[in-house]
Length: 524
Image (tube, rainbow, N blue to C red; front, side):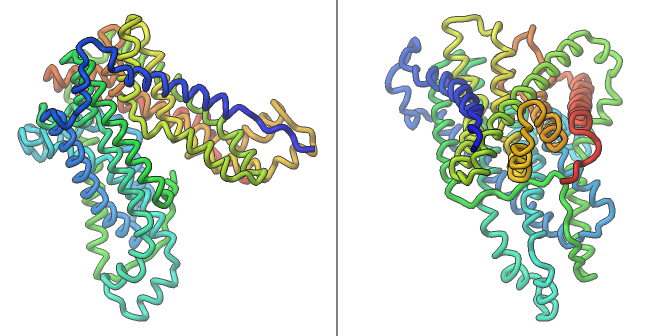
């Protein structure tokens, strides 16, 4: 007799629905705000909103174009030079921007390209130039990691045949590489575009003023500086509609390739004449990614390390940061496991469509930017309670939901495979509940669970958007403290704080990945 399907996913989806719809209701209640007029919703009549909207699209388009173009060149060079020395170290370096907090990377970019940096560009760094540099820093490695497996999937005999036919590099691209890539590029481009469109910390610190504001920064400024909740709500609704539109377009395209945590590329040794070109591309890219981190470390070591580390405010902010990181990781991993527990059972019973919809709904919160949720909660709660009393619950809740798509991404393949392989065996042995978890699930899921928890904790610890909206002097986290130091031009102190935050995030990431995940892989 077939066992009853678990219903844990539906409880999780109910909580997510409540957590998303509640702030949405706060946004839609804009008509009840004092001073609201129906004409406020006609954003096209405001030159300020039109300028913010245009700049948001323009910077996202340029960031995506540059990141994707460079990623194609870099991924191709890495694929062609599979025997490149220190290749594994290079791929780990490309993974760092996924873990490094945005505000820390911005600090490193200022150290390299600022007025006193290694390659100074002066005040022109603050504005579109600085935003593009930072977005390429973050999204170039991500695009490379998404596109590299596509080259890996090209059969080796294709290259052998191209050698026999004496194809030029252009002919290889047209007849072999482009047909494989063209179905993946639109999805990667949309992902990068959406990340740039919803970027907050980068634009807030490197925007340089109102002329370089995006929708998310304009929302923050409307609430925290202009004290204009009506304009913030209009901007938030506009941002929400844009994100939903992009999500619908993305769903109509092919599914994005899986992001491999460790990529093993096939060695496709190119001609001797191309080795110099491929090596140069790889080294220049590695320098572009590594320089901000090295510069930030050097600046921090020359700064007032003892004074900063002896400040009790730093350790209090570190405590709050760790609290948010661990709590968000726990909630997100628990919700993801409960969701996938039902999804994997449905998939094992042949209900593939239902299983996919469960995972899709669990990930749909990714199309609702965290600042949109924060704005909804701010507008809704500010009329009834003291916002300062709800800072940490709201920040943890929003970061938990934002981390859920990453948890689903990491756990879904493993949980489905385990369900398919061991479900019948466990049923025949009457192995259920705690015994099944301890003897079967935990040994097999330990490593992906550790990775998922590490990813979510690092992302939550580096979040600036939500805490900047709700934070105060009594609830300052390390990213908010770093932003405040930069705003007060306390650059030496900011460099030390940035390094401290970076090391803390890397330590937590390593501890969860290795401590919770274990050191050895479990062979299936």
